[in-house]
Length: 396
Ligand SMILES: C[S@@+](CC[C@H](N)C(=O)[O-])C[C@H]1O[C@@H](n2cnc3c(N)ncnc32)[C@H](O)[C@@H]1O
Image 1: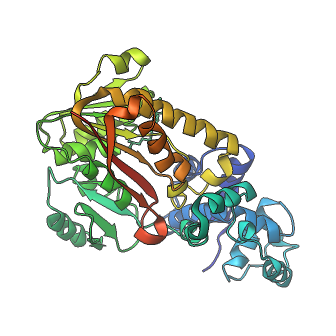
Image 2: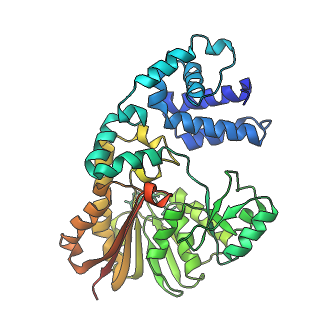
Image 3: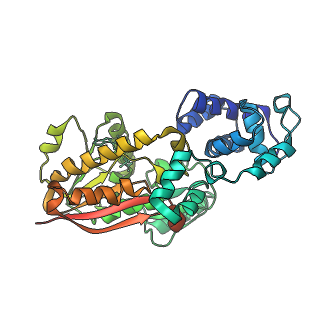
């Protein structure tokens, strides 16, 4: 593959934005791609993939690069992929043999798998022998997964319709509304997306709404609804009958939920901003089903957001765990006796998952609850994102 100055410059500028100005990779990529309308789809694919890959392998690349100059880092990344570097002025000073020699000398997992030392240690402490394979899997590129909006179309019909547009998909076993793309591509431009026939949502994430066992006509609260990925799924499962209160502390995210609901043909989602304890107290014992899709470290979705590992710190992990416990302690009161609550994270750390549920169950607020079942979804076993889903019942 031939390198072009314009796209390599795009990658280098984006990398500087992410690491020097501490910006989020997905937002930087979005802005970079918008900045040059002349780039075709291959150029865009090259930029997005190279930026994500460089972020993913940042520590390893830095360990073998001749300097911290961003062109040197790009050149080193290129060589590490087994590619040949053109003789550009920017790449002067990179010796492929030296890069290879340095690479071969690295033996420690944290550098080879490109993660901070503290995180590697924490992963091993918490996941034991499963950590090795998990971090390898989390360093691979994720599949693009669609969730069929069954309010508007069946999975089979959507599959056929996309195939007519040249978008090949397959239906993974065990995920009844999911379709996986055969090849990565931008599906947001497809007319079927604009008609609300599908959303992009990982297969593991699709298990969360299903665990709630909702039925049409129920009163459901999604207490950390964000941009509404799971609220939309719940509405489809409820055949758009009943009521879903979609709550979050961030009003702008709920605004997004509203727009997406309209595209999906959904009318039962009612966004509600959490302004404090009062908002929660007003809804005491009012929900047949309660979803707590709590904020988390995102360590189960590193394949999609590789910059997470450079942004989190031991302090931020502790802080998010405190918020998770606060949420389950106070929000669980919104569930009716006899109702079902799901506590979920996109993390693989037991300290954010089963430990939190155990702590809750052992506390006075949790004494009316019982654990029905929980699943600890690891990326290495499922092939999709890492998730935790606990289903609890409030005794009647
Ligand atoms: C994992 S995300 C939710 C993703 C969303 N359910 C979806 O499927 O698209 C967690 C959400 O919790 C929200 N959040 C953070 N602190 C909160 C709190 N104290 N109460 C409710 N929501 C909170 C965040 O704004 C974020 O949108």
